[in-house]
Length: 219
Image (cartoon, rainbow, N blue to C red; front, side):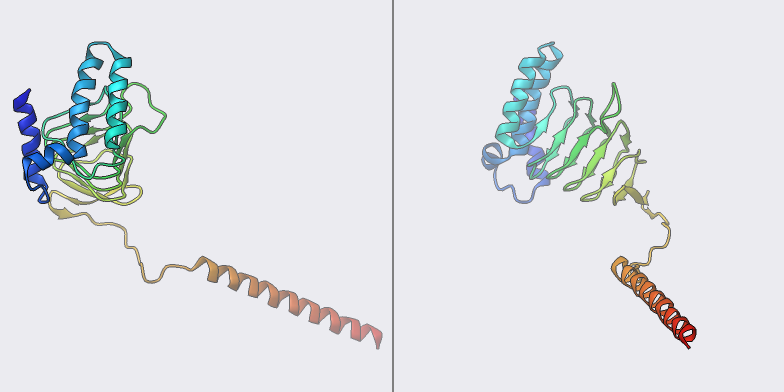
């Protein structure tokens, strides 16, 4: 047990340049505390004590701001950096040496049964606010960009960005995407005003025609 605790502390010291001492890490790093709470709750879950496991999990959530379901399976070397708002679902599986940042959700879409949450491969980095939803695999050595929403499987060695998430780099090679002109995007307000102006011009012409027709009939 003490060896695992030392390994957890070493992970933080290696990956966070702001960590100044092991004592500081033990006392102040909520991501580390959340992992320790999960270890206890997961053991209770496996021993068929779900209510007690959920109580421990909720205590950890209350103290750290990080919610990890007791049923989630987590490999060694997980680092949760600035972890407030991180959510990890019941059937989620996380590989080794994974890094999660603030606001990451590893959740379900609400439609699946059984395996509802993602499987995260080894050496994956998921940046701030990213959402990975559904039962799919994020391949080893992949990176998910901040704010991305991933709904489909991601191949190994990929970089994903966007809503919905799409692969922009795979195996070190840039993936060609459909051209997107950011500088000449249509302005919906301008288009609406132009449409209204056209209708006004059309109505004005019709009114003028009616006036001319009325004048002719009078004479």
